[in-house]
Length: 627
Image 1 (cartoon, rainbow, N blue to C red):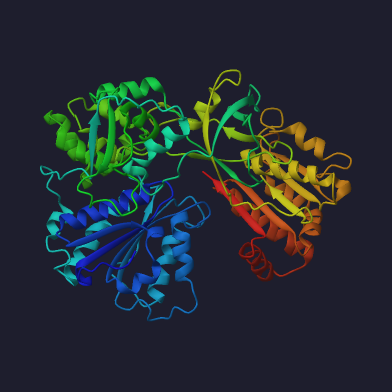
Image 2 (image 1 turned 180 degrees about the vertical axis):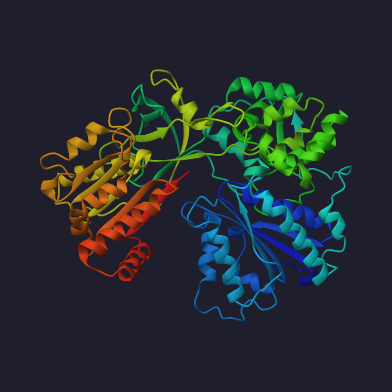
């Protein structure tokens, strides 16, 4: 996107990079408050929809950046960040740009808010001027990231008003919105009686049509599902005395092969509970049988390229809700409560909703909403006097998102199947309410013998498939073993036709008897001439953390097998892959590898640190993590 033709000093551009949706919510809040404060022109855009070469043409910019895994930038930021790191950009390239950065992260991870910190410094190094110091939101705070966001925004508006009062002439309106006035929703809903040709026989087309109309999915138009797979195996991998439920799923296309490679990720669109969808429609007093079409109000509020097209055929309201609006698992955002307060007719409910959205009520709302993982349906049921128009519900209800899973099978062995290793998510909130993961619970409830259809997309993962000649060190505790089951299965198939390099695999779990995932698979490939056999220079080593008084983890096994690890790493092409929990494990594994090379190889620590960093930069030390 090029700079606006508006006078540059009167325009504020808000650029966000979001992976799960939090950064979008923050960016939209920044845009709303700027408009309330009288900013003549505000543009809120995802970084991947903004041409970074136009950045010198801007005068005021706010950047909202989330964090992925081990301090990685979110996907929409990657190309933007790559451009900013170009060496030819000089120290005066962004002179004249005034900017502010707010990051969203979690201080329990080693590289807390790393993308925001790096972006803030790079913009400064390129000559831009900070409006205020960067803000760092922390999910570990009592009120989540908003604990840092609220005072940061107050400071931002004050500083902008002082620097350029015409840009934000009504600072009090930005910081203290009028809770008795509400503008229009960004979309309008057009209602139809059942069209004569309304029946859609192709479920792929129905999914694509519904999701293309959703304003909440406007930047994620993934098109129709690539595959509609059927579950043919649903096997529990953990034993009865385990407090965890991990499943092995096999999904199949019975008509044709599936095009994928090891290291890929399968994205699944889950189904919501039909009775919960019915309850939502009833609570909102909607007609489930009517047909709807959704379009931008006035055609000027949504960015160009929005998939909400007026020429699309209408879809049934109930279908649209089920396929696009997450009313059964996602918690509503702060603005949802603010808009609810406008439509509350009961004074006690209105007062409580207004309190929740005030700075004073921030902590209480976080405890009530996010910590309890209350759903949109639950919140609406607990404020019965609120009747929000469907336009606002469409705009503000969190979108139904696809869930991504590492593929744990090889297409050489299973050309028309995809295998998954999935932990069935369940937890208790602070008030002891049981919560369950939407997608994993839905998958676990599917019966292979019954008709079931699973909408799927295949995406390239962050673990590239290695050539057969490359020696491997694989570390995958828990469900982190999933992609490496595919790696080992593929290398075993390759070894039938050609020589293959050795593979070392380190697995970890709590107990050998209860959650040793794929035990027979690993042990079979570790025997005789298997790809994990000692005879072939490889090996399989398992750490059972709770089977002895002293806890043992994968990093301990790496140290125990220091000689074998170093022998693999001495190869010029050797690669290291790590997959699993995104908390302490990756850092502990890196420290163990560093120790092995230092002590076994006799290299100084500084040299080894630089060598491991070079491996990461060269794509030979790859970490894939998830929460």
